[in-house]
Length: 499
Image 1: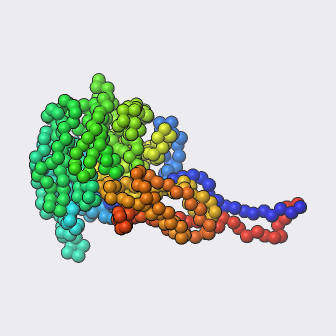
Image 2: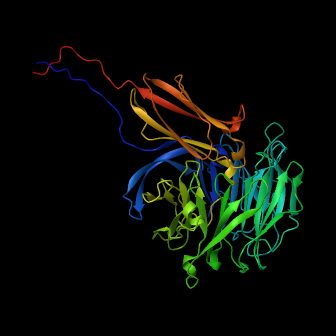
């Protein structure tokens, strides 16, 4: 009897590979002269923590490429913005705006933020105004100076007429009409119409506490916010911490720091009204465990809360429905601000040389946690990380195996639609696998969808996920993932026999 020996070379290790989000959030600046970018990434051996084994992580950010000292130096909040290709436009500590040459914009100093304001500022597009942005800044405690400035990236600034670097064309315009005093607590989210934005700030030093939501449209910033009273008597008037929205904009979470409450609930992106607001009380006798950083997972299913002593993870649906308020607790020290990254990991500031990284934030109960020392020598994080509107994250695609793989091998693709502000418009999702196979999801009731597919021939295929509003594709939310497929079979030498 003769047996032919056939060599098959397939990569079978299962490591998630994610399609990149839009790149407006690709460059981060924070802490003591620290900056990282996802425009270039690296592999790094990372210390496993919280019961996770040490491993090599791929696709981690690299230090921002510059020979200059990054001019940011602050304890808490910052913000930045890049163009859709990941080219830096500007960044800020809430007091000064720097352009992509790391120089101060000519009119970009003296803003109303503060180096110790948890969320010193945030930047959003100015609806209807090409290449203009609304910069919102606020100081520490309850100094009540929430303001907005307008950046025009077409202005020459430190650049030239043909290569402008931007300038501040209007500065420190106070927000009007809010209830309570503003300070530290600030975020934004896209309106349900897909064009406008809401700017949200807490009104504190008043009972009850309020959340104020201003509409930002082509007409400018509304002078009359939508105000929602929190169903508590606490005044929350001292130090502040982070507030954030889920990626689809439907839910919010607010860590109230020294007042020892995690506040959360629902948000209507069409009306600006908060509802079903609830809270979890932390141990008021121990300031070291007060909630500080908050982040939702990409799907919005899980809520992460950081503090000095631990990382807590909640099943958000159960939390909101009062089914369970008990989180998973990881006893990890120095977990401060939390921020979803362009690679769909969650990153935590550590007041050190890197991040705590949640590598798989959707795998509740099986989380992989690491310390990744990715910062350039001589720089460090402090408590804060940049604040971003969740609207910068759109669509991700992941696959359950390392690419490339073999033809005829099944792959399961998963897409998460982080479609803040436009979820009510989505009528279907079209999957084009690039080999003539097209699938559709027409019952849009979730943010996560999966398909298993098998490519029968070798080649590189462009898997495209297209969300539709009616019969029209939403072009700025289309996501493409290149899928390389190998033959994996070498020709058989007929002269080789095994007897």
